[in-house]
Amino acid sequence: MNPSEAKLEARRRANTELGLLVLALILCLAAYALVGLAREPQLPAGMAGYGGVLAAIAVGTHLFMRRVTPGADPLLFPLAFVLNGLGLVMIRRIDYALAASEASELAPSQTIWTIIGVALMIATLLLSRDYEILDRYRYSIGVAAIALLLMPLLPFIGATINGADLWIRFAGFSIQPGEFAKIGLAIFFASYLAENRQLLTVATNRVGPLMVPPARAFGPVLAVWGLSLAVLVFERDLGLSLLLFGLFISMLYVATARPAYVIGGLGLFAIGGYIAFLLFGHVQDRIGIWLDLWNSDAFGAGQLQQSLFALGTGGVAGVGLGQGHPDFIPIVSTDFIFSAFGEEAGLLGTTALLLCYLLFIGRGYRIALRCRQEFGQLLALGLVTLYALQVFIIVGGVTRLIPLTGLTLPFVSYGGSSLLANYILVALLIRVSTGEVGTRPAPRRRARAESSA
Image (cartoon, rainbow, N blue to C red; front, side, top):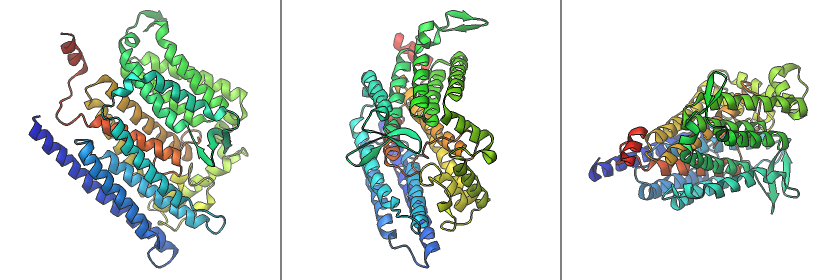
């Protein structure tokens, strides 16, 4: 692709992004209006402010990206924007539902976090003009990520919320450092695997009928296994433990194409999970609720029961935005916001929401496939796998497909830490995608052979 063609392609992508942002803005404003009209027969008083903030975010960010990230993937930010916008609508709906029983003003706070999150995305794009600089600081990033992950266990600043030790509190603010730690670990894993791919791929030892890599190659698997079990045991968070281990095993398999790592990793996690089940009551409660929900009296059973009632009430088309009872669902603004959305939007609405997530995930994997640098490939792969696993774990939990965990639904659930971390994730994916225009992806083996020649 010559420079003029690359410039035209970049302009076409930018125009596509602008059109999608306008469509997303219209959809979010229409949903906000429906929620307000269900409460009283006039447009909600805050609609102008809500629409103005979203329009300013959309236009300002688009103009910035048009100049700073030409040729970036045109779907990533619009998809994040529409999910964030619909999340704000549902949080405002929850505010209305809870207003009679308790003081609830979550939507203004989430709007502020949205503005900060987009600003952080812009700052990340500016600071990572060459994302490969992250490869040089992998050990610093890895150590910082582990420190963030274990920080809630520290005395004085660590806080327990909803039975999990995932928070730190200082200066009147609560932050979930694990949200940022998982992005740091994805960067570290990508850098480590890009450098040690050959060592991890070569099989030199025999274990029964299988040829496996050297024993020292399993060191990282054992280290991440121990880290994920530490999160499960000490922080009492099954979701984050599954997320971290699933992230590493997925990246390890893609980097090496060796099923032995997947089989060995799943075996290790099953053994560790079984031991944790035998020793710790909170793990037994989660598994017991999952296996026998309707006869369980464990803490959390009622939450999942109300979640399933809400989804069943919604049916195919939903009861209508603003017409449901999200106040019946415990922890509805965070863990169970998908259930509240399912009650009011129904199967059709939740399917549309999941399709937005699937489209985002598909674009992320496309970016990974088209990237020429091994670090960039694995970085994009890790980030989008992290995103996909989080969506699967939370949706699977509230629908009782898997044991319930305490993760948040990306961009939709209430929470500043999650929102900020996900906007950083989007920024890094956008930065990797800017290399697509003007280049053609070469097969990895051919590119390696050419470089060696």
